[in-house]
Image (cartoon, rainbow, N blue to C red):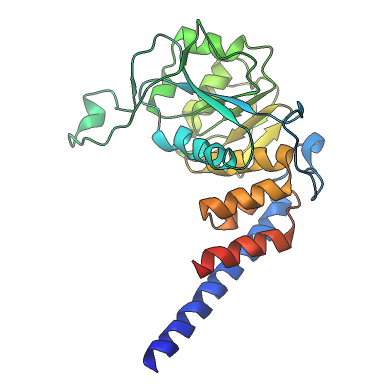
Length: 278
C-alpha cells in the first residue's frame, strides 16, 4: 500500500514539475525571438527531403587550446541526435595542424588545484584543408578565446561561402575580433562581459538574452546556452517534428522550447510524457 502511495506521489510530482517547466518555456518563447527574418519556423508538417538545399546540414566546429568542453560538445550532441533522424555532417576544425586539441587551461594560474579534468579532441580538418561547402561554423568559447591566433581570426573572417555562424559563450570574442559582429546585435557571457564587449565596440551588446539572432549570425550567452542556441537553429530550419523528436531522444526537458518559435504543443507534450514515464 505504501509503495503504491509513494509511486503515485512520485508520478504526480514529476507531472507537476514538467508541466511547470513547459509553462515557463512557453512564456519565455515569446521573449527570445529577435530577428524578424527568422520569426517563424517551418510548417508543423514540414520534414526536409535529403535533397533540400535550404536546410543546413554541414557544420564545422572551430577548435583551439582551452576551449570550454560544453561549448562544442553541447551543440554537437544536438546535431548527433538529429543525425539519428536525418542526414547531418559535422567536423572538428583547427587552424594550425592535426595535433590533438586539449581543453586544458594554460598554466600556472589556472591550474592551482592540479586537476586532471581536460578533454582531448582529434580534429578532422585544418584551416589549410577545410571541409567543402560548410553551411555553418560553430565558434565555441573558453579561456583560449581571449587570445585567439591570427589564423583563427582569419578562419572566421574570410569564409564568404558560409551561410551561418553560431557563436557560443566567449566565442563571441573571436567573432568580434574578426569583424563578424560589427553593426550587429549580439550577446555574450556576463562573467566575461567587459572582455567580450571590448572586442566589439561597434556591436550592440544585449545583456538579458540567452541567445540573439541577427541575420546569419547567432550568439549565445552562457556555456550551456549553446545547447539552446543550437536547438533554436535546428527548429528554425528543420521544422517542428524533427526538433521535437530530437528533444525526446535526448531526454531533454523542453525548457529548450524557449528556442522554438511555434513548436506544436502536442508534440512537446508527448516528449514530456515520454521522459516522465521512463
